[in-house]
Amino acid sequence: MNIFSASAKPRPQWGIWWLSSLCGAFLGWLFIPPIWSWLAPLPLAIIFWSIDQARDSKSAFWTGFGAGIGFFAVLLAWLPQSFAALFGWVGAVPMPFLVLALAGLWGATAALTRRLAQRHTILALAGSFVILEWLRSLGPLAFVWGTLGYALEPTPLVQVAELGGIHLLSVLVTLSASSLALLLKRRPVTFMVASSLLGLSAVYGLTRPAPAAPNLEVLLVQGSIGPLQKARGRSQSELELYKRLTLGALARGATPDLIVFPEGAIPNPPDVADTRAALESIARPTIFGAAPYIGGQRFNSAFAWDGTRVTGRFDKIKLVPFGEFFPLQDELQLIYQPIFRGMGLEGLRGTAPGTQSKPLELGQIRAGTYICYESTFPGISRRMVLNGANLLVNISNDAWFGTTLGAEQHFQMGRVRAIETRRWIARAGNDGITAVIDPLGNIRQRFARLEVGAFSARVGLNDVITPFVHFGDWVIAAVVFGLLGIAIKRNFVHDSDVDAFAI
Image 1 (cartoon, helix red, strand yellow):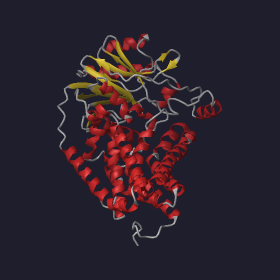
Image 2 (cartoon, rainbow, N blue to C red):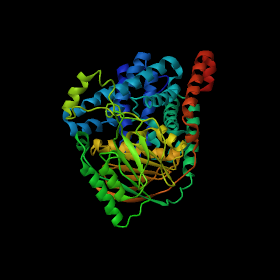
Image 3 (cartoon, rainbow, N blue to C red):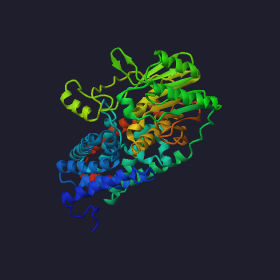
Image 4 (tube, rainbow, N blue to C red):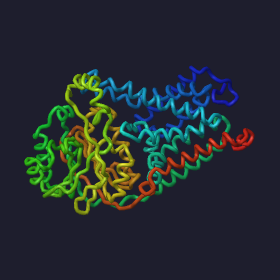
């Protein structure tokens, strides 16, 4: 018997829950070797079908929750591995809470969609899951790992990100999943529409012109300093390491137009005498990470040095929740302090967020600089480009991920920012991933992780404004209108009329 047949008897709800959970786990696995991620609509279609088969919104919640447990438990399996290696068993504590919270959002989305859309649930899920992803990117607790649009990164379809950003890619994934589920229910119209969109997107991606040849040299410096060493106490030996690596590269004949140090590379800001002396000895345009203490607050910052003076500073805006800032830290000391003590970080305090997205200017280079976690948020790089950035610079410290897949997932998500903005990206990581990405999202140069060194690479400058940069998240507005259209059909069109649409 075909379990997807519209005439088949409903399967037991526990059977549907297990099917959805297994498909969620398979979906998470597809994102681990990215070469297979484009198959994501297949398990997602079964998840959508399972939610539609639920008896009521309560059953839909548990079906979506099970799928979310499977998906995020597999996708984020690196998290307890990396943090337990640094902090012991205490480092693994956040993992189950994070997975449960994310799965709960999937469950709530499934339940709400099932309740409001009724017989149009499968189609409505294509939109509601995209809205959920957008909502997960907002606010101080934003966490965007698991955004479905990244499934298309290995394909030419990823190039349409310049039109509508990562959420347009998510629409292609979720609409494809809905169309497959509806096709199995003998409703072919959505499948034909989705197939046409995928075909047009593929043609668009395959016909994008190659970027102009890069004409600027950058020196990306990778110190590979242990993250706990930085967290427990900074040392001027870090400054000496970066100075030695840079001067060594210059002595070997490097002539960079720009030098990039990673996030938090220098212990003290440039108004400290030994930091200024080190920068003056390098005497070239440099972007570097430091953590200044200003007005009683600590910031995670990137500075621009033109060879003689500081020309700009960017303070990290999007802080890592429970990593760089701790909600209600003063009110919840009894909870935070035992955890910090167990991690060997007693007295840890949060970082203050920045407020401005202005490029760092160094001559002809207007570097839209963002820090680590911010590479997963399209709005940061978009605002940089709107404010005049002709190059993107991402400084990072992925050493917290250890040798797990976390660093690779972080890096791969950041590649899409190049496509959305059609900018070159120069990325310098503390222990990697240090690389150069062209405006098509191709990795032009990538250097060995954990290696200590200064690496020469080439980038270009670009002033084009893409539709995504110009219009922003217009896709979200379109999805909202689409969901409103489904609601209108449900409430004002007779069932016999709806059947004529065969969607």
